[in-house]
Every structure is written in C-alpha cells, then in structure tokens.
Image 1 (cartoon, helix red, strand yellow):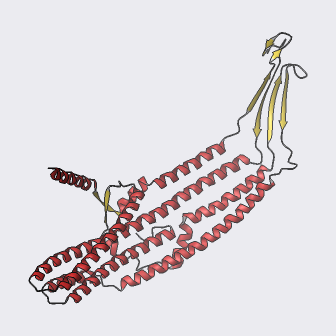
Image 2 (cartoon, one colour; image 1 turned 180 degrees about the vertical axis):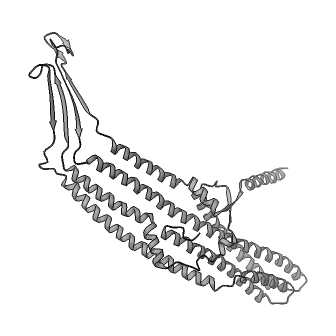
Image 3 (cartoon, rainbow, N blue to C red; image 1 turned 135 degrees about the vertical axis):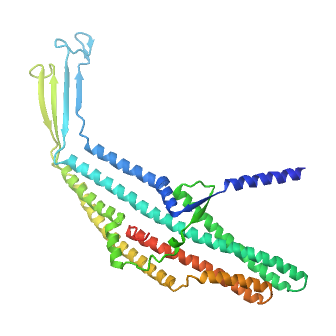
Length: 422
C-alpha cells in the first residue's frame, strides 16, 4: 500500500511539473514586442530620462526671495517680551532677492536640456544593444532547437535499430561487438544532445529575462523559412555606404557629440559664474535707525578679487578636450566595427552561396536508406557509423551556418544603428 501511495505521489508531482512547463511558441516579432513593453533595463532608462527632465524644471526656477525679521525680545523697562509698539517696542524687517547676471539661468537651462538629450541617446543606445542581443539569442536558440530535433530523430532511430539488433544477436546473426558500437554511438548522441539542451536552456533564460516571459515557460522559436534562408546579404552594400550610415545613425556617436556640446556649455556657464550676482534688499526699521520708522533699499555683491572661478573654468576646458578625444576614439572604433561586420558578412555569404539548398533533404533521404540497408545487412557497420557521423556533422554545421548568416545581418544593423536588413 505504501509503495502504491509513493507511486501515486510521484505521478501527481510529475503531472504537476508537466502542467507547469507550458510551451510558448514565439516568433521574433512577438519577442520584440514583449521586449519593448516589459524590459526592466529600458524601464529604468526611462526613469533616468524623467529625472533629467525634472532637472530642466529646476533650472527654470528663479531663486526665492529671502525675508528676515528681528524683534525686541525683552524690554527691561516695561518688563514685557516681544513688544512691537512704537512707544516701547522695536523690530527690523528685511526682504531681499538675488538676481543672477551674465545669463547664468539660461545657460543652466540649456545645460539641463542637453543632459536630457544625452539620457535619451543613452536610452536608444541601450535599446540598440539589447535588441541585438535579443535577436542574436533568438536565432541561435532556433538553430540549436533544430539541431536538437535532429539528435532526437537519430537517437530514436538508433534505439529502434538497437532493439532489432538485439533480436538478431539472440539469433546469432550479428556480433556482440557490433551491438557495442551501436550503443556507443547512441550514448554519444544522448550526451551531446544533453549538452545542447543545457545551452538551449541558458539561451531560453536570457530571452525570458529580456522579455519578462514567465520562468516556467518553455520557449519554442518560430522562424519563417523564407526569413531564415532568403539571400538578403547577396546584395551587400559597400563598406563606405555602411560606414556613412553608421556615422549618421549611431546614437552612441550622437551621444558622444552631445557630451562635447555639454562640456562646451558648462565652460560658458563656469565663465558666467565668475561674474558676481547682485542681491537687492528692502528694509524697514522701527526705531533702530535714523530717522525713526526707517525704510531703506540696499544692494550687495561680492568683489571678484581672489576667487574668479578659475579652477572650475580650467576643469571645464579640460573636459572639452577629453570629450573630443573620446569622440575621436569612438569614431575609430565604429569604423573598425563596421569593417569587421562587413567582412564577416561577405565571408558567410560566399560560403552559403556555394552550398546546395537541396543537400540537406537529399542527405536525409540517404541516411534513411542507409539505416534500412544496414538493418538488412547490405552495408557494413563501419559504413553505417560513418554515414551517421557525417549526417550529424552536416546538420550541425548547416544550422550553424544559417545562424551565422542571420547574425551577420543583425550585426550590420547593430554596428550601423539602422535596420538595413529586415
């Protein structure tokens, strides 16, 4: 009874686990929609933009006026506290307002607006990077899933062959060493498939993190055959055209240029800060001045004798030079990235163009015939194993080539900051 109960619990647990492992059929279009709607890194980058916009609001605000009041605390003659009457009290009230000169406020507003632009460029550059990661992982996952299906078909066929061969072994029609060779091939395929399934699981986890798909979902990628195999790179644009496109569209390059603008605006602000601001004030004194009920107006400003903001001005000049050097380095890096992607796309396309598109289907028919002929003992075990190994290698290499070809297109889009190739 206990054993039956244990089996029942195990069955229910397995059923519950199987129910939890729902399969989600996912196309690249759907994946991108989920990515744009749910990715936490993009959401956090949006918050950075909102904060930068709040800094613009702060920069637009004028300084608040200041008010001060001094009152007689205790009159020892009348023995009273806080008197304000003319006869026995005294108080002094003053209000002042700071006025910034040299256009400091407008310069601070422009600086804050430039910071918003930089945050927006950073957001789109993050989107560009994550989108490339999403699409690259998606197509790599698809290729591995197709290869895993090939492994499953081969393993199933070998298991059936092994079962039939064991029957032949009992009849004395096959040697024990042949059975061992078949088992060895079967075990190798099972181990390789398990390693591939581990990699598939890791890629699936990365896709789930990018799209916020539920962790208990099993992703099954869907790729249109035309999308996977169409010769989109056969008309690859010239390197100079791709480089011009990158120079005009890469948001990280625009952000670098905006950083130079920010440094230049900061220099203008620091120079303006060297000019002192003026503070105007209005005061009323009941009896502490001459004449009584004194009303006065005042003006104050620091004398720029020692501190003329020399340090901040020098730092701002150095920042401009640093940003210009960074921009030049980024341009050089960008040119090398485009050239590398261009060369890689050409190599992959040349390799793909030399392949027979019907080779895979013909090979599948051949391997099926090889399996049948081996079971009939028309070919040797060595020939059979060689065909199986060659077939497996071909499928893996072909799926890898399809991924590299697709990824080469994605890499060109990534390095140019465009969607040249759909």
